[in-house]
Amino acid sequence: METQNILQKAINQFTLATGIDAKILDKQPKINQLQNTDACVEIKVGNQVIEFPTIIKNEIREHNLPELLQKLQQNKKEGLLVCRYIPKPIKEILKNQGINYLETAGNCFIRKEGLYFYINDKIVTKERQTKEGKLWKTAGIKFLFGILLQPTLLNEPYRKMAEITEVALGNIGPFLEELKNEGFLKEGIENGNQILFLENLETLRNKWIAMFNAVLKPKLNQGRFRFVDKQILNHWEQLPNADFYWGAETAGAVLTNHLHPEIFTIYTKQPKIILMKHLRLVPDPAGNVEILDVFWHDQLNYKQGLVPPLLAYADLVTSLDSRNRETAVRIKQQYLETTH
Image 1 (cartoon, rainbow, N blue to C red):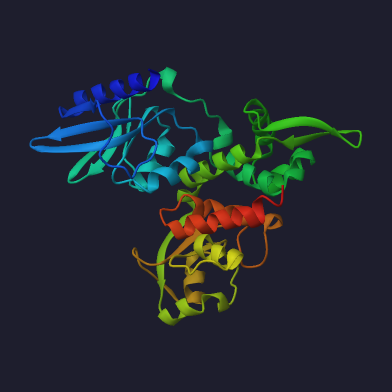
Image 2: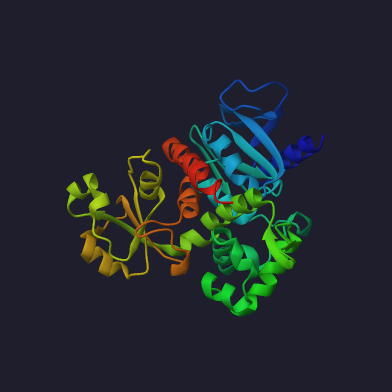
């Protein structure tokens, strides 16, 4: 009953905002690719009638976004995700990946068979808003990256935690308090000493991945480029290291030996002009080389020339490319599940 209420409210607001006829069909969707659908929605524009097998959620939380994305990506052009409320960063992820969505306030992204609707100015009521503190903003995401890579930092002095995670000292206490409040940080006893340790690690990691991709990663981007010498694509592993780290597909290829990269992702502390000269790169908005800023301390490095496996996993797990998602699963099994 609750899901039907959500769907009806969303349909009503969509119709009110667009003047377009939309209704819930009293039948199963004709399209069978999208599994475990909750309803079928019909949108009619003139003589054009389009059906959307629909998944209904009360609210999308960041920790279950990767799993939901994998389900939706396989059918993104056919289905519709309807929610009571979708956080703004998640709406951006859904839109960027071409996944149709509609929330009860009337905000939506719907593109199918010539139809295109994008509404993003409807006010979300207070009771629908989620409460996110500093932990899930830029500095908090950096802090969590360090803690996820080195959980022992939790039992170091605050100054040490701030130094290694590269955040302001005054943020450490509030970050830890938020972790406790969200159920990710617990106190315990080890060898007679009181210690802090992470709990619900899988959920925390998934939430971090979603927020890294939505909040932090876009701020790291220095642009797209291409190699002047196309032959480099065949022996990119042999490029001399110039204070940079391979990420995403290139990192996945090295970590699993399971992927031939098509996009070459580089994280660096160097100004892009230096890297362009060293690797013979030229700017190209459609290029297959992307350069991003390094955001972590040297003590969190994995090994020379490669980002930490957690970052490679975060880069790949929400990809539209099934090869990348398969590689992400291998990284998780080989490097993440065996280290905690």
